Image (cartoon, rainbow over all chains, first blue to last red; front, side, top):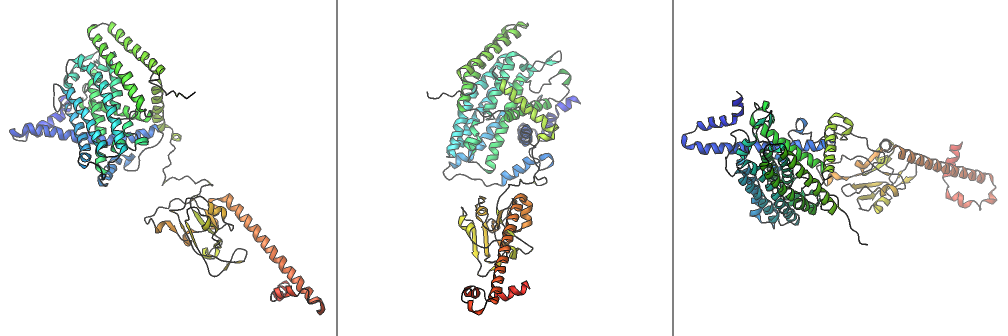
Length: 391
Length: 223
């Protein structure tokens, strides 16, 4: 029974595919999984938009949307209908072909990332050996879509937003990769399925998730910072700063193309949160050994939604950074720490099983964090801006 | 240490998030169409024309002097003066506006028309639900739509309306007293005219010619 609940989607797929003639089965299996991904994540997107608007409202002591349906739950439906029936405007001097392609490229590239994510036991669309590499390749190609949108619109705000987006995404791609490399070093594999399997065992009822090690915790924090920047979320939402750039690279998009950008951004958030859960939070494994009877896909999606809630919480709290603060933070703080984290991960691997490695690794990371924070503040790379006036 | 401020901020928003569910006084939102806050007394948006009594057309205080039309910075007022006259609140015959239009899509709510009006005829309203499907005709308010009773003025701006009423009552009393004094003076003169011998006729002759018909009426009324 427990086994059935855990594997219900896999069994369902096998049963559906079994109805077809043998020659069709491999293709049908893939199509079915793709359709499932395309159906589930946009639904989750609608739900997230509602959660975000309600949650942000509560953080600002407001009520949030409450007009459409009970508690405003049908607000995303209303928004979808609105964006579908809106006029699709293409600027006269825009490059029409690229302008049309940009949102499609974004959504397609983001959906590709879901292919390698293990969403439950035996629930990976493509169990690739180099899954992580494939994921990052796809994630990096969203930058292309963003720049296509900004360039083809022929609008200074769009172009500025796209420039900022590319600069920011490339800068934060480096710490993102570096923090994931530590996980690869420990697991010895780029396959996301194997990374989950490596974390899915328990000592005294507690899991061996990578976040519960010094290097894993530091890696997770830096991964979270880099993903926030990578998905253009507040406080790193400079590419679409409403108050300074109108809306950044999607200024010239309206109607359903804009909705696709919006969808693409949230899907990127889901997929990168899913990857974070896979790398550091044990993917679909349960947080305690006595909870392993709960279906694995429930754990994966709970971890994903928890990350989304943290994203929303950050957005409700932090003000937007300035461009130079963003770059200073990426290159002078996060990147050195991720490099140090790689060394610490290696130390952890070779110090053996004892308690010494806990002390040594934690001390190195903590000291580095404190020292670099202090030094950055002192030099003015981090922290509030110091104004220098002419004497 | 680096990151302390972020943690403090996160704690603050978490407090707001949880607090907004348990304490209703944190939520400042008014559910507008169902709940309303009464507008403050100094609220103003667009002008309206005050009338006294029951009939708006007869009771309009406006005398079509067109000062507001000339002073209006965005020129949103259009007035046509009447050919005939009707009595105002003191009984004095005055012109009245045959047409009085305000285009509230142009009006900037500056209240200058109210400041310059010598007849307390135009005041600022607080009505804000003025959306319409007809963006031209629906926002061009004519005499009939602009006319609102003095009671409405009392309702929206009680203090100001009381002051205006007191001032108007004072003016009316003054005008009445003046009329009475004039009538008395005229009556006295008429009496003197009757009493004096025919030889002194030349001196008050101008006065007598000035109101030749009034005298008998006044005398009758006093008697």
